[in-house]
Image: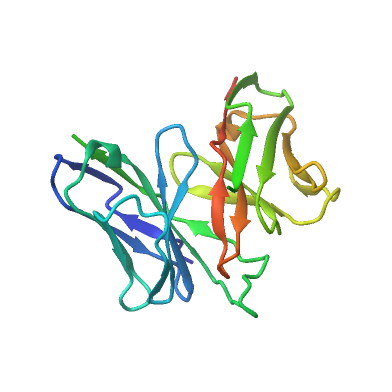
Length: 121
Length: 113
């Protein structure tokens, strides 16, 4: 079956432009995560959706970053007025995440998409 | 603050060598530790470790967890050029009821013919 897909794979933006990055999770997956990966670093958490609800946006670096998942499937990460420090790979991950008693199952594996490499000039 | 530290940051070996990658962690409410392999861009899942001292194995790869020492290792035997990748270790913070992954910086492995 299809995995997580992201588009575009590469995006070059001039400083100050707005960009929109798309994530198509695995069908039926409840949880969706966005991570930011700077060159030579591990991915860092940005935000989390459970279906259409954004339950955690604590990792978003500034109010220029906005994410949505209006119908509980496809998600879009939007960055307004891009800056050079926004250059990174943006990874999306989804998981089945059948929650029980408020705790995530230990077997809730996250499946990652190929990412979007954003370069801000 | 939760953190995951990996070592070495990079490693260059020849085909056939055995390598050991290290991961130490300090994660509140620890429940599991995960290893991912990242080639090009998408991290792909390797192992989830929850119990101390029990080795998980998949082909030439194996991993083990030491909960007392807050440490895990990933072993790759008889390395091949296809093993060249970044290996990421992550500890899930599930305090919010979902698994927010906290990653280390990764170990970049290069296997030369």
